[in-house]
Length: 67
Image 1 (cartoon, rainbow, N blue to C red):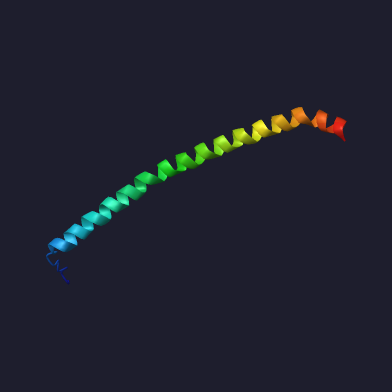
Image 2 (cartoon, rainbow, N blue to C red):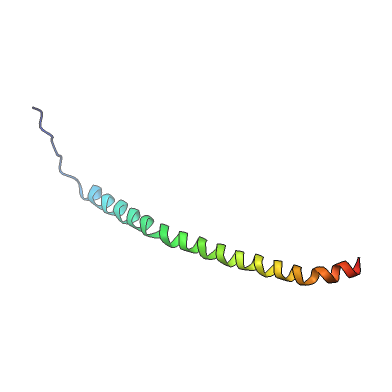
């Protein structure tokens, strides 16, 4: 049965492993923050649309009188 030969890793390789782990953790942690930001923006945009619709409903009778 063949044995797996594990070569000792250099200091640079260990450092790069740590860098990739930190970057991966940062990316994983940033996804929920980005999703929350997008949902907050969507809710704010939706409230603006509702506000504009209400203004349009208020102005519609005046537009009919003008035309």
